Amino acid sequence: MTEGAAVERAHGFQNQRLVVVPRPLVLEALNRPITRRLVVTDAGVFPAAKDHGRYRPQGAEETIVILCVDGRGWVDTAGVRTDVGKGTAVVLPGGTGEAHAYGAAADDPWTIWWCHVRGTDAAELVEGAGVRPGRCIVPVVAADRLTAMLDEIISALEKDQSPARLVATAGMAWKLLATLAVDRRVPEKGTPLQQAMNYLEDRVDGAVRLADLAALVGVSSSHLSKLFREATGGGVLAHHTALKMARARHLLDTTDLTIAQVGRDVGLQDQFYFSRQFRRLHGVSPSAYRAERKG
Image (tube, rainbow, N blue to C red):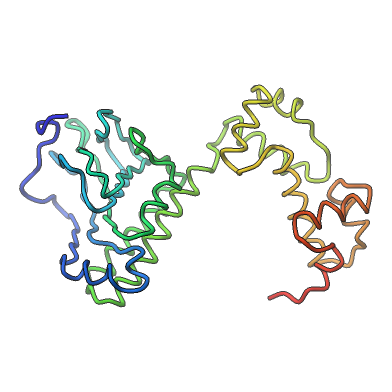
């Protein structure tokens, strides 16, 4: 990557919003409880950012989050250049010392909402979003929801950068990054994973064979198992059992059905088998769970 990969514009953009927390305040925040874990250092929105571009030969101390809500742009990390379109987030980990560059497309410049963060939690949140060298793009399920979070961060910091305000925006940024981590695991509409999950949700009261489900959504059993492990941390049948147990908890909390009836309602005809499955997941029997005081 050469410095010519991005031309840095010397002036702002019409209707832009931009907040930069003074660096002495950032350093103080990094030595206080809560904000030492996460603190927003900069935030803004650049509408139709023609000629926008940044090149950092040693990367940045801050983790950078960019949400493209219109137009197009690009990002270059680890020698890999990736196009960025509407409804896409870019996450660039901080403190890596690795060069990066990004900018707006010449013919359709992007509109971006963005923030920079530092703190001990940043690396783990970035990892949770699936970001790694050469892969800094995170799919977004609901861009308007993330835009609202970034707007809240900017609006708060526009008022002041007091310790209390930095704590408040730290919570907002944590939620933003956690949402990106969740969105990575939400299956896109129409994909085999989404079809399979919908099928299992609709059949909480029945039994499903992995091979049959894989054939139904058009993939191999091993591939479907891999998709479920990546999305849920467990296999297909484990996910189906979790759905059954969620339904069982609801029935135990809200109805007077017997334990046997609850088991049958979630497709487990043998009361003792249902109870064993419930205890394995919850650590208590269905009757003990029902007797617990909640709320």
